[in-house]
Image 1 (cartoon, rainbow, N blue to C red):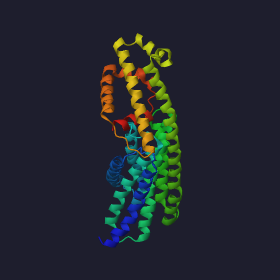
Image 2: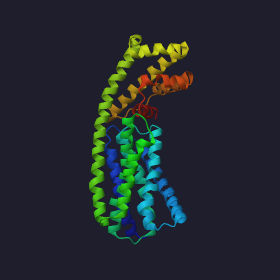
Image 3: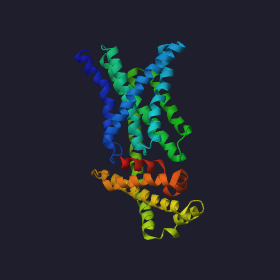
Image 4: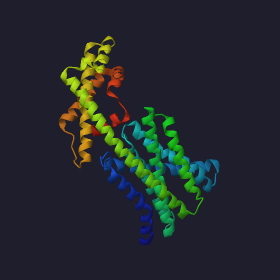
Length: 337
């Protein structure tokens, strides 16, 4: 491979990495750590390798020609494999807001595009500048943008429904597949298709990003007030007069006294950690990095012990008081890390 070919290949690699870096820079609350992004990019690269064998196997089994595979088969298989990474992150509570959904979604697509373009560079070292402009500013941005759209729409629908299910992911997946397939059809010239991707996807993701940033600020303000009020009730001894205290009183008929006491301790710890997590996010937004101290880690260890003492039934019973949305679970994961 010549130096000139390698430089041309950089045109296919740098745009998507530059856009991903811009998303990280715009993340004022620093919801996503660089090491997490690198890990997700690696997952996207692994998905690219897996999709190569899946598509090759389908071509061999069905005798579909290459053009039909790129237009109708690859968009489904590749977007499905990339989507599985996002679904796994949501289920593990690594994604809590549209901001990190957009970043992680684009990171998966970036990893996929990196491997795809490196393979293409080895297969066609003589490709000209025009091809690499299409691959760098078109194909690579399309891969990142399609998965980011899937992640953002999926998380938005999960927030509306209050739970994650197949129905919440389907619209975003359908849009990602259609976008991928339409790009591979090249209804217009490759350059015009690339220009269309650049005119539509980056501004769309930027608007979703900014809207989510405002939503994070509103959630922090509301959640901070609610957690502070809950902690004051617990520490002041006035909890029994509140709706939460009355709910705990009804649990006395269903659980033994020590378990109810553990439920109250769990509620206090959860609220303290929730406040701590929100405080860290507010500090990050102001440019300060706050490490997790040993006292906080001890509280997590105590929560683990209480979860075993309470049991699954007790945790289900206390969930109405904790308001465990995906955002709340995400913030505890963030603090635990």
